[in-house]
Amino acid sequence: MENLSRKIREKARDIGAIVLAHNYQRPEVQDVADFVGDSLELSVKAMETDAKTIVFAGVDFMVEQAAVLNPSKTVLTPEPSSICPMAWQLDPPVVEEYRRRNPDAPLVVYVNSFVEVKSMADYVVTSSSASRLVSKLDAGKILFGPDRNLASYVAETTGKEVIAVPLNSYCPVHIGITPDKILSVKERMPDAKVLVHPECPPETRRLADFVGSTSQIIRAVGEIDAKRFIIGTENGVIHRISKLYSGKEAYPVSKDTICPNMKKITLEKVYRSLVSGETLVKIDEKLAEKARRVLERSFTLLGVETPWSRK
Ligand code: 13P
Ligand code: SF4
Image (cartoon, rainbow, N blue to C red; front, side):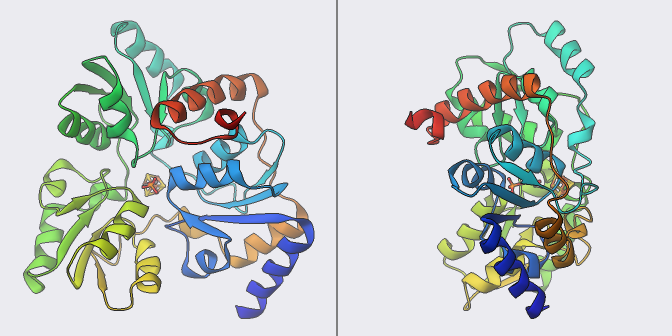
């Protein structure tokens, strides 16, 4: 494994590539990457880098977004079948229907969606920016999708009426983080703090000491004055927590809290991508242009620096 990691580093350097990895990636893939982060951090990193080639170890919508934001760079996915089932739960005709029925409500879409849906939206957010952006909007009623759980979290934290689009979309991994599982781990370690992702069901979030994106959870472990933490998101984040904070202990809610699509990417596939230049992510340029404008508007409202805002 060490040998392969070294070959990846050498090859990336030789061809001027950067390897980006999401916090849910396998430990060895996180370790070989130039940068590991949550969805927003990875988008920003993809925009900031001078590297001509980006190998993106993440699921389909993340890789697609990196390509949308970087039309002049080569964006490669090491495993095109690494999909996010939640992103597939929001189709353009459904968006049109909700738009038609709620003409005055702005449409805010979760980054876990595809370029065509993003191109139809008013704003795009991630789990770390959703409440912050929605609280800045004048409107009292918002359309939000996909993910009924993040939609309800945004409603709770902003006090606005948030309509989930569609009503029943959810992440198959986070829906399994149920209150009984949290309570059973908590029974064994009552002193432990509970940190969960907003994609968890509302009843689970109510048991939490902290709710945030994957990177916000990782940072919170460093900031909260406690030794033990129960981690209510995909177990990949525990690797980073263990590397960052040697004096702290992070426990999964269940050993099965795994996003199988994220785990499809291996060191072998990252290396193959660098060597073969596959698989190249191609986006319809008209749609990409429209989606870029929506992303640009969203980043501006959030105060995120982009190559456009620096112009
Ligand atoms: P983050 O933006 O918090 O990393 O979330 C991505 C994701 O897919 C959560 O399931
Ligand atoms: Fe999609 Fe859920 Fe996997 Fe995140 S954990 S990538 S939302 S399926």
